[in-house]
Image (cartoon, rainbow, N blue to C red; front, side, top):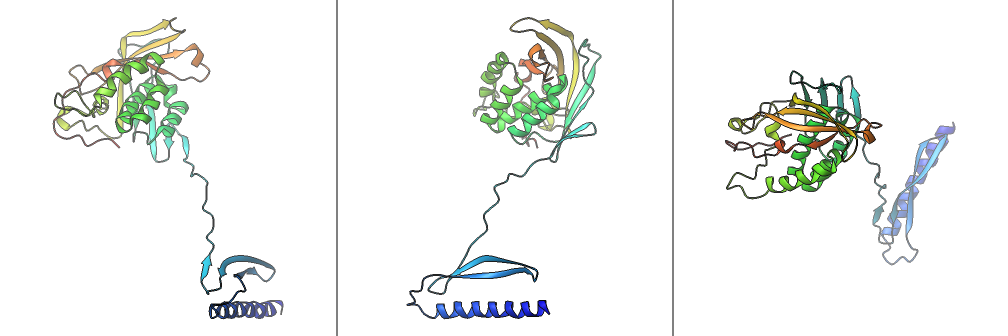
Length: 288
């Protein structure tokens, strides 16, 4: 009985509201001001009244739109077994170097599905996963070089994040020219980061295998304790890149004593990463 009575009241309210709007719409000279229409929602035990539209003196309905959400979508990131996932992107360290001894018989690799989309992703992958590995830090240098080619401002932030201050200036001085606009002498090489990925050679237009892989090997220089400019340990290693006659591209990864709490390594020196590689044959298709 309660629901029957309410339905009758609800129908009457809707009809009355429609009649009121029709009446106001037919009186263009009305000075009664704006009339607000309301809608009853909910069930018979819980009635909500929502203001949905306004009928002004000329009969036009002005709909009040709901405010847009200001929340930023979150990206799921973290370890999934031995794989680090950031959204749909995956990163994986397959083996690493021993921190007490590195030899030329040490081989391992880092694989990833994509170049990071932006600085936020790059920073998170570095601080939560790859930056805690010697070879992972080397792989992130390859990513940073590619990101610099896409956006110099973003790429520079990435380079500064993972490099020692002394190495930043060395890298930036060369990359500014390496990613220049002139190509007649072959010095400008937008594809140079791709040349460090497994399977990429000049004859296939530096198209790497997928997932992208940075292959690493230990250097005969091994490890060295450093005291300048601060205390730490330097780890010497190679990235195997097919874009040069000498495939072993040496770099120095360092762990400063001040970084032991975070466990993050930094690139300390890597001129062979951005030394001019073999001139491309064909057209470079880019990286994902």
